[in-house]
Length: 295
Image (cartoon, rainbow, N blue to C red; front, side):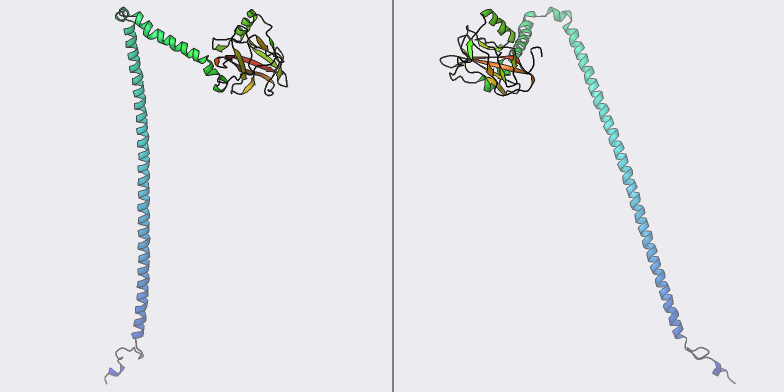
């Protein structure tokens, strides 16, 4: 008897069931596994790519850092080289200057130069100009223009003079007045003289009785005296003082701080009739406020 009846039909198992669903399920799993593997491979490749990029960036940063360090070293070396060259150039310049000086010194001390020495020309073109420059500098330093502010120097006389209540005739003779004028060592115009106490004692209320400001009788002019400090601030100014008169009791414009004050006095001389200014003299004096005679 034939066994065809016991042979399984196509597409069926021995039990008579269909195997196509099992094959499909295996294909889906295989696809999922493959997809998962592909995702893993993509992530792995992405990570490897990122690692390579980080490695390249790190390598580039290291290269830049090395280049910057090398550039700094080269810059320092260049600066040091430049400084050495500058020092060498200065040293060479000093050496050349010294050589020139020695060369000139040898020439100026040589017989050839001394024989051709023209003392007249040296005196006229060197000594005389230098002497004039020195004399002019000293004269300007002691001039009223350089030591008296323009406001005080150019003060105008309007004809008002000190009255008899505060002014009196000078009690000193011409010899004593000469000693006074020499003591204060005034500078400026030589067309007149004046005298004043070089150390004036002032009370706490700003008054003094020993100003001893005088206009010698030999003058032919009226003088106005102004006392001012180093900043040009006016501490006292008299009215016109006629020849042969002396002023002692005065009050300063304001109270001064206790102690000694080094100030200047400016005397402007004017023509008594025309009120035209004749000249200016100044001197350095000292004010003693609340200080005794030995202070």
